Image 1 (tube, rainbow, N blue to C red):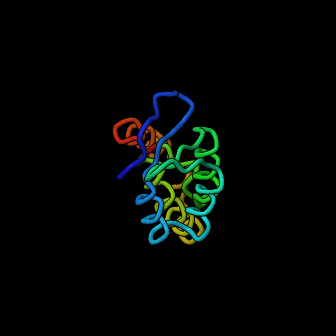
Image 2 (cartoon, rainbow, N blue to C red):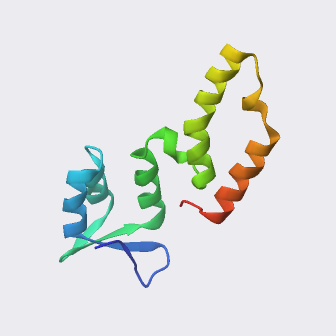
Length: 113
């Protein structure tokens, strides 16, 4: 089960089962950091929104932190390829203005939060 907003706008309510599931698909230490920062009440963990955001950021690989949308993901894959082609062929694909426009369009069309 995904996190739910607690009636207090600055708190987030996360099921303990969800946190335990995170042990299988999140970096080591993520679940423990949540538990340490929050307050267990029955089957739920109440955690301040700011604390949750800080933990998520800490355990998110840096390469994904600056991704705004699909355009940024495509750029992260295509840019090194363009750089390699430019160095071999003497072209300037990496500096293509059309690529930047398509990147922004994809970011707006399919944002990633």
